[in-house]
Image (cartoon, rainbow, N blue to C red; front, top):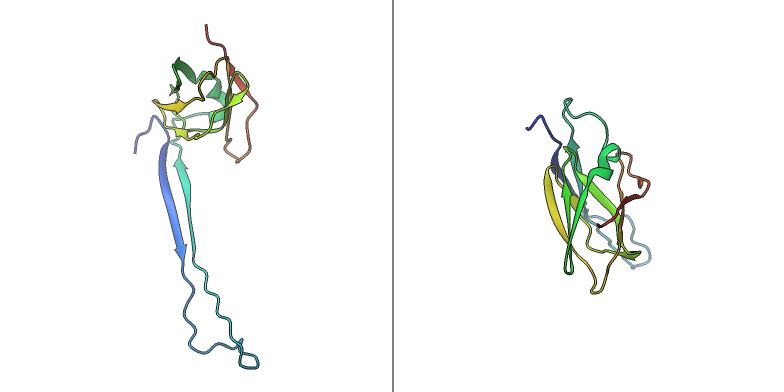
Length: 137
């Protein structure tokens, strides 16, 4: 694993109920069997000792490039940036994802969207950060 940046792995768990041949829920000839399977995936992020601080400390360093109806976000930090919200000129951008360390992602903007960018990230504790701002020049 790299020592200069965070690494992301997915942990997926699936639970299937056992089959019960004799149900003790039968009453007066009526039966109801309900079996649920549960499946969930969560991100597991490994942060090496060499990476100091938190994503919130450097989320203001994200760089934004507007090209037509596209908005590219560049992450020059060693952290995964999990976007909680992004607005351009006060209009929300949908389809948000995480941006890997030292990488970029392109987001779609609704037509005619113009203005400065405001964003929040998901913090290490799962909450939302304070808003960050980028002013296009």
